Length: 145
Length: 244
Image 1: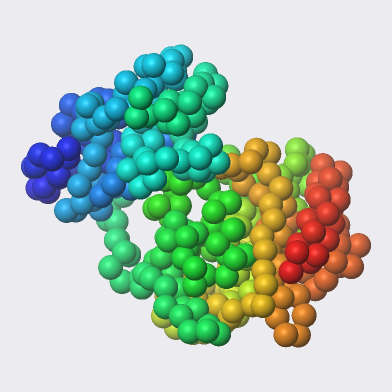
Image 2 (image 1 turned 30 degrees about the vertical axis):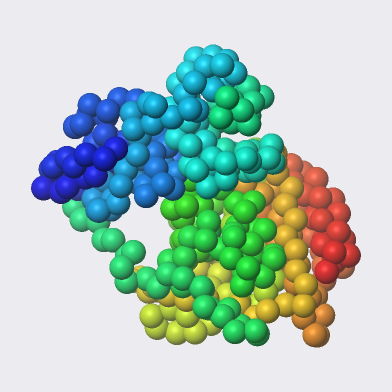
């Protein structure tokens, strides 16, 4: 049995050795906002924050998380970025959007006024197959409204 | 993922950066994200780390692990019974090549994808394992008939630390299919020391490749599908040497 700190709450779970953080979040805790697309650490759809740092939950073994605080898209539901993504129309299919917002939230936390280059560097690990990048960039630039 | 047992190395591999004016020590458990922003780290290594992988992977991936990255060769990754997997031929040599080697490719044409390894070769880094100390270049070997391994690590041997001398100037240049989150087609690390400029290349051989000088590019052995890499390497080496 391990204790997992997610979005400010504590959950006791008993995952099999080798289970990923993404599987635990989605299947054991019902936090299905975290998406799994490639499942091999490439696309960024499964991005969550560990102590504020974006990581890939599909290739993070849940047993390695230990006491670190996990923040998923559900923990960011009131973040201004959610509104700015809507305002900027920064998605088409929306499957990458949770991961995009999780990465962007960490960026603006560390750097509230990122330049376009800084956004491109910090968000490079979140692929969008619809190609909404210009509007995602716009949403992050205008996140404070 | 499933296995009988997973061993967590995070607590036994040193993590962190410590330095003097002439030498920087890097724990093998230090992440690429930490190296990318640390002012004690020479520019060539910071740039190579920043150009590698994605932010999420750089936050998770360690420099020790990065040195042991497996090749992107599609035949090897798809499990073809190729030379590297113990078979009798390299499928890339006669099949589809593009991201493959232009040096050291007689038996296996795979290309080593590590940007930081090329930077560390240019810096002449020294590696410490739990058993020995060695120049980084000696960590790698080309596969032979009797031994298909690309490294000289023994089973269970653990990379613990790197020692990196401070160059007078250094730079990392990288050609890739897109500007971010791509493996190197060719990466060139250059570092100037008192006795001259040292060059380390990624994406050009089955192992990170130390280039004695720009003229060694004349002795490249490209395949039809990788000939373009020689021209890219010439341009990047020229620019890198000019920059330092």
